[in-house]
Structure formats: structure tokens, C-alpha cells
Image 1 (cartoon, rainbow, N blue to C red):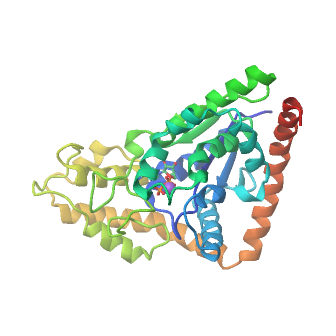
Image 2 (cartoon, rainbow, N blue to C red):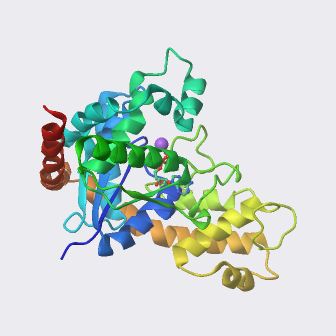
Length: 330
Ligand code: ADP
Ligand code: NA
């Protein structure tokens, strides 16, 4: 029986993932892996588009993979691998770059944002062609769906355009993937700055809940989260972004509806509500952290799992790549 195929990935850009990554991506991946033939990659080739320390990058890559597994991605069911272990990614990216317009790539808003922040000398050509590598990631696996945040939607649109262009120029080769955009309710904001997305690359970590933090530290961060002076636990994104964000986290981690949580805390203060959420966070992440630490305590076994999964990925990727080379005349 052929399940439809799913591809997604994250950059190993920090020692720990944050709960936005968990709620917005990993929880969904964990469910989707049941009904899709899923490929989850740790995209280390993307991570080197900005400056990196080699030993630290290697460590972050391993830690990211361990957190995928600890969060419930099953490496015996899904294909969980490190992007650089499969050379077909950069090989296909090169070919796709030859059918990508310079102006077309220049319209990618993420590149425009990042390059204007870094300045042109600190902006690499790799950062410019990042979306082409991402297209290769997706197209190598004949992907049906790509779950992504809305900031990646434009890149998946480019991927679709490149697939269609290649197919019409060289004959049917790639499946054209569909983006599945994360719902607004799965978007988590910084606890200290609740109109900014929580991010593992945030400048200050005071408002970031890390998957691998000591549970007591996360509980403290919840207790110190920014709220407002109204004192009522009520969802209102515009006027009460702090409380609304906490409600979204509470609902996502418990599977409960927001109105039910509002009812439970009606007439009680923010202190009680935060205490309740701190317990939820500790209960959810305590076991995830423990499992990740166990996996990281045996790097040889983790590396063995990643190598076996890379071999599975490579089998699929190399079939697509061989077809592409053939069609292009290589
Ligand atoms: P980060 O900003 O933490 O570096 P990435 O850009 O690497 O995150 O995103 C990895 C995955 O996590 C993507 O699927 C993205 O949509 C999801 N994600 C990241 N931050 C959040 C957030 N604050 N809320 C919900 N999902 C998020
Ligand atoms: Na990132």
C-alpha cells in the first residue's frame, strides 16, 4: 500500500528546540507520520548559509535529531535523517539553479529580509540560493505534502514552479508538492514579547521555552510571562496578546479547547492560571527532555540510527536524481 509522501525539516540552529517548534511542527509531524510516508530531515546544509562553528554545528545537528525522536518521531516508521548525509540534495540543487531565474530568486522575501539585516558582504550566495536547495529537498522525494510555517510558503511556491518548469521542459519527472500551512492557533509567541514569534534564534532567551531546559526553569519563565492589567483569563489576540499566547500553549499541550480553559480559570487570577500552565509545561516536557538526554548519552547508537535512515532516504533520492541526470543529458 502506498501512502502519500510528506517532507519537512528544521535547521539545527540551536542546542535546543523551542516549544513553538514542538507545537507548530513536531506535534503535527508525530500525527502525520501515521498516515503519510514521512521524511523528516535535519537540514544542516541550510544551517551553513550563515556563519557556524564546525564542532558546535555537529553537536546541534545530533541534538536536533534526538529531539525529533524524543518528541515522538519514530525512526523505524518515518525516515529521519541528516540532510548532508544524502549528497543528492546539493546535486539536485545545482541542476534546479540552472532553471531558476535570477530575478525570481531575488524576489524571495526571506532572503531580502535576512540580507538587508546582514549587509551585502556578510550575505552569502548560499543564502541567496537557499530556496533552490529547499526545492531540491522536497522534489527529490516525490513529495505530496510539505507542512510548513507561513514564512516558508513562498519557498514552496517556488518549488512548485520549478517542478512544473522542469517537467514541461524535460518530461514528467517531479511530483508537484502542496504546502500545508500551519494554523494560526499553532503559532507561539515570545513570552516576554508576545507579538514576536518565539524563535530558537531570538536575541534574548528570556521569553523562549526550550525543550531541553530544566523543567523548573521553564516553570519560572511561565510564571514571569508578560500579561496585562485586566486580570481575566480571556482570549483576545489583539488586546491581550500575552494571555492569549499562554492560552494557545495551554490548549495545544492539553488538547483542550480555549473556552473550556477560560471557564476553568474564570474569576481566578493570572497567578493560578500561570501555575496551571507551568504544571502542564513541566508534565509535557519533562519526559521529552529525559528521553532526549538518554539518546544523547549514547551518540554511537544515535549515529547508527541516523546512518540507517540516511541510507533509506538515499535510495529514494538517488532514483529521482538518476532520472533527472538522464533527462537533462548528463
Ligand atoms: P526557529 O524560528 O525556531 O528557528 P524555524 O524557522 O527553524 O524555527 O522553524 C522550524 C519549524 O518550527 C517550522 O515548521 C516552523 O513553522 C515551526 N515554528 C518555529 N517557530 C514557531 C512558533 N513560534 N510557533 C509555531 N511554530 C513555529
Ligand atoms: Na530558523
